[in-house]
Length: 403
Image 1 (tube, rainbow, N blue to C red):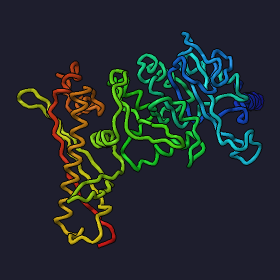
Image 2 (image 1 turned 120 degrees about the horizontal axis):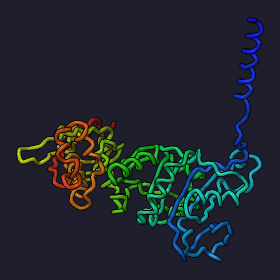
Image 3 (image 1 turned 30 degrees about the vertical axis):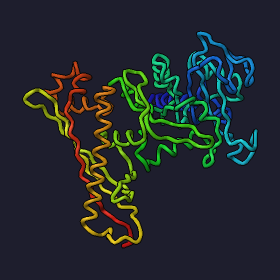
């Protein structure tokens, strides 16, 4: 009896293993996939020259039979994928091309991707997307922009930590250039985001941006400008109440990150006696304190603690860089510059745009629940009334090897 039971159990285990070891019913061979490395989405605008695009499955040549305005022609979806044969040094379809870029017009991203599948000899796969770019016209269309963000968030193949940027102009232009230093677009953009040798742009991913827009109705997107053979990722795109509000400059974006305690390494140039001295910012900490006075006015104190190096001065001067008086002068000048820049961007967010891009309200909710209970229903207004004091304490740690 026990022997028969053992045989039944063994048979059940064998059958279970066989079922688990079978292939997926919807599997696709890896050599049949097109691995999209970058995705660009623009608002479709009739009359503009559309390169390599199609409408409703019908292919169009450049400059001929361009798609016309219709309820279905709402956005231009562009993808770029590598020439795998060239990368493997074998079987390249077009030997001189390291990547392929194609576009199509459709009502949404999902249908546009299906249209592209009818033109390409492979199945589009978004699981390796390195960067998502959205065009200026799309961002300025509130409804269309929110639809795009929702669809991107729901797409199971796209990672939530993929790099996301707003392009000044058309996003698809970024996919059709031939970069000088890195032929694989997507990887090129990812490397710029990852190096973090500058604080002049917010390195925010898709998940953080969507969360910020959903929770506070606003966010700062990294700004990407397309040149002939390169990109410039610097500055930001301000979103408030799901709408485009303004482009932010590089210095403003850097100061905003100092307040946000997310700034990376950077160089601050200060003028001392007519010499522009580069101060290399190597470390930055931000301390924030909130309290309410007797008049029920909320006060915010932001203290920056920075360290860095003097990267240059001028040869043949009587004053030594090693002198303590000179070092103190540099520290004071850098502190004054940082405070001025942070104060300017804080004033702009409070009184010009009225948007809390730093989630100060969330900080108050967590650490000062009694204050938050009184202002949570009217935080947008209370944020504009808040009294802010910003200070900076800068220390020079190195002055170089030349005395």
